[in-house]
Amino acid sequence: MNKIFSISLKEFRQIGRDRRSLMIIFALPVFLLTLFGYAITLDVNTITLGIYDRDKSETSRDFISTLSGSSYFKITEYVNSENEINPLLDHGKAKCVVVIPEDFSSDLARNRNVSIQYLVDGVDANTATIVLSYVAAATATFSRNVSSEVLSGKGIKQFQPLNLQPQFWYNKDLSTTKFFIPGLIAMILIIISVILTSISLVREKELGTIEQIIVSPVTSFQLIIGKILPYLVISILIAASILIMGYFLFGVEVKGSYFLLFAGTICYLLCTLSMGIFISTVAESQQVAFQISQLASQLPTVILSGFIFPVESMPLPIQILSYITPAKYYIVILRDILLKGAGFEVFKEQILYLLIFATVLITVSTVRIKRSRTL
Image (cartoon, rainbow, N blue to C red; front, side, top):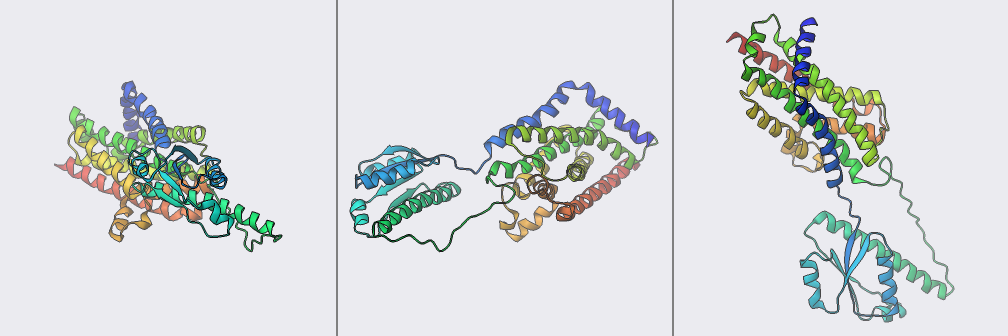
């Protein structure tokens, strides 16, 4: 333990000497969380509409008022001919153009079915789907009101056999930002921790101090643990600062156990830090270590972890490849604790996978350092 403590103390002093890098280490995660937290969202809060009212009646104006009265819709253009519709969509001035037929009011007065045309910009499939669902809901609301007026005029009370009252658990306001915040935390922690540890051991090689460590009475395992501990402490402080900023900026609260959150974060950081140590045993320069660290941490976390794209929707070979992505397991842990408030029994398998991952990488790194010391 004294040898491990000595190596860790040396690493702390090395980190403390470079104050500019230390400021970047703590400022960069908060900056990334703020930037990505506000930028990455699937919520569609404002839908720009174009209106082509061929009927120009009081009833059609009532229908347009139903759309404009919603906080989701913003009417930007009124067109007077079909030739004006395509330029409106081409230039992005409207996400959807509503075409009200010429006999809209007269057909409704005669109790006939009326078809309203919605021309939706389908370049962004996700946004187009949301737009379609919103305009369909607005149209259904107007249709129910018309039906109620017709029935009440005939003295018939409207009967609704089924009353739908959905209840959303956990993320009740359906905020995609709260869904993405756990993935952002996992991505920021793995990028910072892997880069820091991968450069630390390579720096020893470039400065020539690694030779002094090799001839010292320190085992390879003690060297790895001594290198990991300082960055583990720093990463925990970074994780705490990210959670605090997530609460104040995005309202993300810890609904579960703080102890389980701390334990899961420790297991995840052991994985990421051991990845950095393994990379440092392969790379011969800080530049190479930095490039490998970015490639090994950022891309798998964004693509294969379920951060943005559901793993269940991926082809089977890609799903198998995602098993070697530690962020995949940590994101599950974070979402269970932060959003659901779940207990240990829900994500115990993820904890086990993280511990196995860390053990394998530390073992492989220890073997590689032993071989380099014997050469």
